[in-house]
Amino acid sequence: MNVEAVKKWMILFTEKVNQNKAYLSELDRAIGDGDHGMNMARGTTEVMAALEAKNPATVADVFKLTGMTLVSKVGGASGPLYGSAFISMAKEAGTTDSLLAILQAGLNGIEKRGQAVPGEKTMIDTWQPVIKALAAGNLSEQTIADAVAHTKEIKATKGRASYLGERSIGHLDPGAVSSGYLFETMLEAGVT
Ligand code: ADP
Ligand code: MG
Ligand code: MG
Image (tube, rainbow, N blue to C red; front, side, top):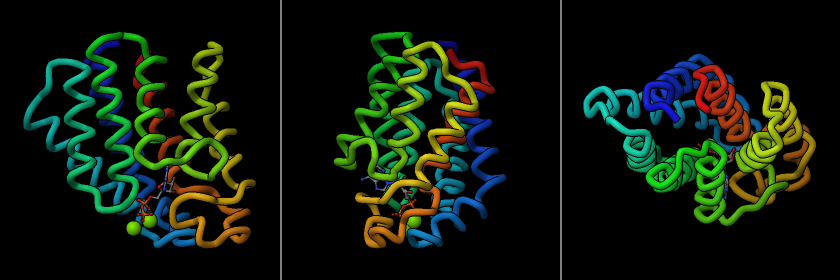
């Protein structure tokens, strides 16, 4: 895993989130409190500023700074969750170069922090199938799109959307959509 590709990944993710800020908040308005786009746009923009200011030299340091920035700058649930993912990824990147092991550590971080499992209509429902496909050697944009689309079919049992119960069915999960952007831009940046 190459540090320049990882920096490119963070830049592309920030751009994608900012381009789709209104859409992410619209999704969150339907089953949450309407701030997911704002939270993620603010968080990633702060990450860009931190990366520019500190110019970390290793993959582990890029992930660590990203995670710490998200935890400290994002108020919503997504800040600590994405933050835990990147901090766990940083720890793993200190001992391995394997993208699979690093993403798996990120997912473990999210699950530990949020006490959720696959199938509860959260960002985990993007992370888990993506990691499964990566392990099987067939991760593609289509896998990511399918994982995200599946969140529309299921009922939320974690996070704000769970207050809606059955009425959460029929709506995409905003965090699953932003995680879709994370993995699309990972492929685009050529992170392997
Ligand atoms: P908030 O709900 O505090 O306003 P955001 O709107 O920024 O925070 O983020 C909401 C997203 O966070 C949800 O769409 C979901 O993907 C994710 N999420 C919420 N709770 C959990 C959890 N316990 N585990 C994993 N992801 C979660
Ligand atoms: Mg919200
Ligand atoms: Mg909120």
